[in-house]
Image 1: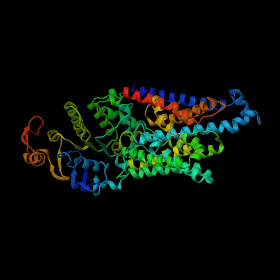
Image 2: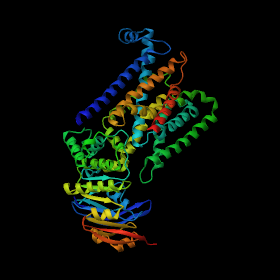
Image 3: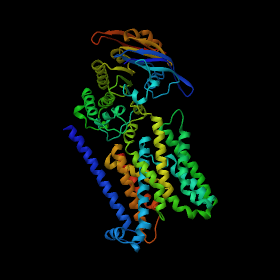
Image 4: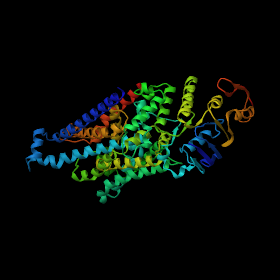
Length: 334
Length: 260
């Protein structure tokens, strides 16, 4: 009876995974069908399978499809990054921003776009490098005969506010150029094309491949550093590796979509509410929830004031923040 | 399995916390580390369980230096139950115990039939088989500690290290945990090294006692020889009367007053 119970648990979680997957696929089609021009499901199929050179075909292939894929991959990367960090730090409030991803990426992108505008094409690389450098700096500062999560979080807050000061200084000195970078600062997916897909695709793939290997380690890291050491995990090395992976994933997302860090904080939370904290189920689930949420928020951002578009970051925070508060209240009750 | 520690130094920042400690514990013995607050006993046990870096000295398991072994291989023989543990609110006893199989799992592999049998065995040994589905956070202090011990057992260790396993537990749970440790020691031949605060419990449940003071090992031996009015006076700063407990066949003492 006991083992059948375990099986039931497993089946239930697999069912939730399946539902998340279906939602992800549905949100994908909703995103392709909606925007300034509404395209029905039948028309989508027609455009993809049979027609060429029609308006719908153009819209789908050149605008909506790459944009939706980027949104899905951005959601995947950020959500995975956040889920991994929350495990490594054993802190449900950890997210890519805590390891300096937004602050680092923001500052370096701004430096490129405002001070060296002729090198604008380096901005995505700058975001990526900035995220990684900020993470390494935070890690280095938190190091004292090893790194404990609490010191890492405090160092993260300090470094983020320092880099934030740099960002604000640049914006103050070049007020005329600020309007051009707002899209990046709040996070947006307008004007995404196939090039963006190829930028983020490798990282998302790496992230998904990792799922096969790291859930057990994350589950054990959650038990505490000393328990994990006792179970034969090299805690220091593993933690460093996972933090770098998180930084790479989030950095890749930020480099194509701007500072959407909030996703990495709330999506793993939302997912955990449904499927629990076992990383063997949590990580694959965050892929589906992360991509659906970004894809749907992006669709809303295109439709709500159509034909005008607002950055997806605004929608995300407007919906995410209240939900996050609700989660905190719920935690207090428990 | 035997545990030998030779000339162990442990530093924190630049301060030496453990100074030149050497001892040897035989297979199947229960050895308890005692000492006043801040004496370095917890540091010593953390160094032995490789949670702290050793600045000098060596640790041997059955005469093999642990520096020459992979940490995952060590975990197949030596299980550690630290003081600070963390468990998510939706982890059941069974899941927790299954993590004990981690050191035996090959890269990327899942739990097999043998692993599941060992998990069942660990649950049975700790008397948790009927509540295996319960979440760990809903358990009483004693049950929770038993669940963690079951996780350690699932490692199929030959040595079990426990850092203050009775702290924060009611007296009945303290006895429950120590009785379980004793039983595992007797039935499985498990070597046990632990830190205890209660000296009478240390005397009752141990084969050997290590006394740590100011980071040094100042006495090591059988409880009835180590627990003396001298020790209690010099190291624990209390006046006490020492008696023989005929029922439990051990030494015990009743503290009278502190010495200024």
